[in-house]
Amino acid sequence: MSVTETDFLAPMDLHDQPIERVQRDGVEYVALGTAHVSRSSVEAVQTLLASESFDAVAVELCESRAQGMRDPEAFKQMDLFRVIRQGKAGMVAASLVLSTFQKRLADQYGIQPGAEMKAAMDGADERHVPVWLVDREVGTTLKRAWHSVGFWQRFGLLGGLLASVFERETIDEKEIEKLKQGDMLESAFSEFANESEPLFRSLIAERDAFMAARLREEAAKSATTEPRKVLVVIGAGHLKGMCENLRTQQTNPAATASELSQTPPKAQWPKWLAIGLVLLVFVAIGYAFHRNAALGAQALRDWVLFTGGFSVLGALIARAHPLSVLAAFIAAPIKPFRPGIPSGGISAMVEAWVRRPRVADFESLRDDIVHWSGWWTNRVARTLLNFFLVSLGTIVGEYAAGIHILKSLF
Image (tube, rainbow, N blue to C red; front, side, top):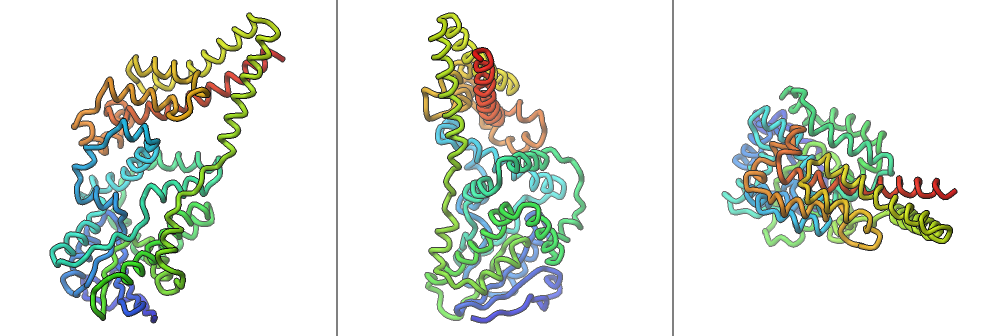
């Protein structure tokens, strides 16, 4: 295993591109750092493929993202009922939100997000060489990032995601190109790590290690004869870390990739806190009935009105259909006796049934959610919004009911 330094001796049209060459286990990896919305990144991929011969092309994509890039129409076939029933509404919404920043740049400069990744895959197909998908599944990364930070930090994370959706500031294309300079990236990520080291680890460092392991894993099972040469197209923010891992990793690559693919277990304290609150409330209601039947009836009524009322408020803010509002009011009070789909899920499924999303809603979804109004006019977005607001309303209602009932008794 040997290591080479950053290569800036490529042809003139590549001299300002961040390229590193790493020799490992008889394989030469030519790693190109790209900006995911950049014309020159696409040109750099095409130039490298044309000027050098590669036995494989690796891209910073997971299976689901690659499938979406190869078949953009597949998104229109999404089954909202299944998404909600399987508890994936949050993951779908987060993925949509994350794509809006790149889409805003795409609209500004007329180039699709990830165009350099698609150019790499298309170039590999034209040359009849295999494509290696080496990034971790985006859902796993989001879950690990979410679980890596504390309760209050999650509010900041959500705020940052929402801000990225509605930011309107124009971004200079020169600034996009500057993102491919290693020193600027290193300083930016260093500051990011200081602010939230667990978040940096899950979003950046873990994926650096994962992609290096996947490259080694694919190379080990490749039937290509020696010497082998692989083009690796990754975001510039991963170039330094991934190459360093590629040089130094000594662990079994399959075991490393498997370990980093594990979804972290959910924290148990929120669950037990919620169960404890509900038990406390129902003990209080039982005590109220013990003291006085009228007092018990009043406590039970307060539970229904508070939980159902706040859930209805969430549905109304989402401008849900009257039947969805009714479903929210019915589902929220009986949530403790109905494990499984949350009240927001029931209301959202009613919304999707009454106002079934049209093909046009799926086609325009990414465009619509960039604007505030799009979350209410697009039927897919409104269903997701209804899910979150009703679920949030139910939680607020439970705490409000518990406080009110306990205060009325003591």
